[in-house]
Length: 185
Image 1 (tube, rainbow, N blue to C red):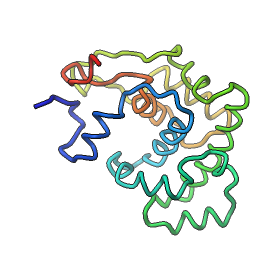
Image 2 (cartoon, one colour):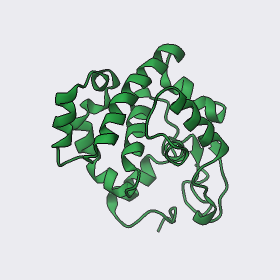
Image 3 (cartoon, one colour):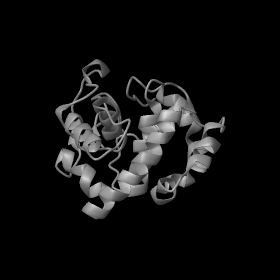
């Protein structure tokens, strides 16, 4: 039996997410945008809640095509607010629309969002060597800097804790604990 990070439950969706996605370096702009939005949606909730609704989010938010989301108007906001398949928090939905606009501006300035966002770890994953889950921080100086830079650009729901979770999810940091079978991969 494989040893996984202690936060992983026996739920197949969680296991698949941990084994196939979490901590894997991601440089694809659309995927990075998806994870930024989903991490913001997760604020105050459990990650499994977001994972269970992920396919619904993809359908409701045009498969996280930032250009389309940036064009959303009041009718789209109301459509999303009545969609029981997603997290219906008006501020979070408004933030997703605002973040799409800012995401496009970053792409324009840097050539890609990936180019911008990976600068916070020097362009390559930071490999941590935590022995126990209790050692894993909720935020770091790098996530503080990312949060500050994103907020300065007008992004919403991008506090340091959300940014650190985003960094973990997209492989900017490898926070698989030392006993996890994925740590050395």
